[in-house]
Amino acid sequence: MLTTSFEQNLAGAIEIARSAPSSHNCQPWAVHYSPVSRTGYLAIDRCRALKGLPSLENEMLMSCGIFFQYIETLMRHAGTPLQWTWFDESHTTPTLPQEQDGLICFCPTEQQTANPDAYHDLAEQIRHRHTNRMPYETTTLSARQQFQLREIFTDAPVRLDIWQDQTSRKQVADLVYQYAALDFADKAAWQETYSFIHFDKNKPVEDGFYLHHLFGKIPAYMAWLFRIGFHPKLNRFTRLLRLPQFMAREFSKLTGQGPQYLALSLPDPNPHNLFVTGMRLAQVWLLLEQWGWGIHPLSVLVQHDLPKTTLANTLGMTHLPIFFARFGQIKIAAEVSPRRHLDSILTID
Image 1 (tube, rainbow, N blue to C red):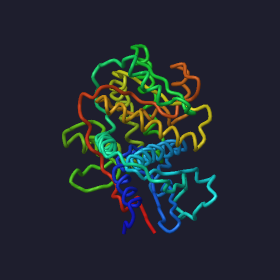
Image 2: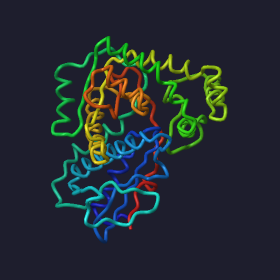
Image 3: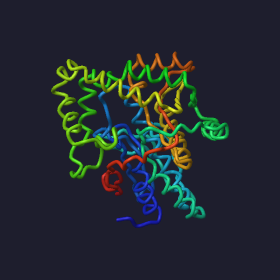
Image 4: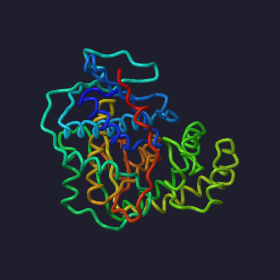
């Protein structure tokens, strides 16, 4: 039972923040709060976190950073701000369930005057933010928009790079065509990915995604062909028919349209910096939402060492990217993805 305004506001913030993006929409977060000690923590839920590739740990940390950025800002607008510190630096580290790894500890701080209008506006932005994998308008990013995006990373450990020229579009398309089939080459990684794809639109789920989140509306026979043709147990047959190469070619056509790309890179990609990167990425995503723009992460280019290094060298980056995406003005609205229930995320003593 929620007995204080802080607990009620925390639950309300998480109810909204659960719309945060995560790889495969796995939503790898867990939050606990104790009214007795007036402390709480955010942890990675290892039962939900991806583990098919070592690099996916970076994405789990960034996803949790996005999730917490939403919570922290909503709580501030609600007039019940949080004070937080790194879990591994806290003097009051709680004992966690075996399947959780702590990221931060938090506690209430002095109440402030609430800002209901700011809370409402932010909540609406978060609810309307969706990963958009559809074609974008050809609208070019203005100098002022670039400045606003770069301003988010002032005094941050992470670097933002942006490209919007035709040469970069061709280079990215070529890299996607060359490396996109890697998603299917690693059997364990593809098996994990496939487990998050849902084929029955009438069956209620709380995570993962449907084929229309990837391809838009497709005929029933296409969904059936994908379900059979890309089943992990048919991996050898799938590669024999060169289906991954076909998917890579089609994917490269989409990604080559751009019209813009952004990369985030870290000289020191430690867990703290990756979490902070997620917090800044949350601000980028919502700023783009204000403009009516969307983001489409091109994870295949940063999840494997060879394409990541090749991407950095090709685009002249100083450090290896930890996040790379195409972005632009939305032409086709994205579909809403499934979401976990609040009770499966937040526990209160």
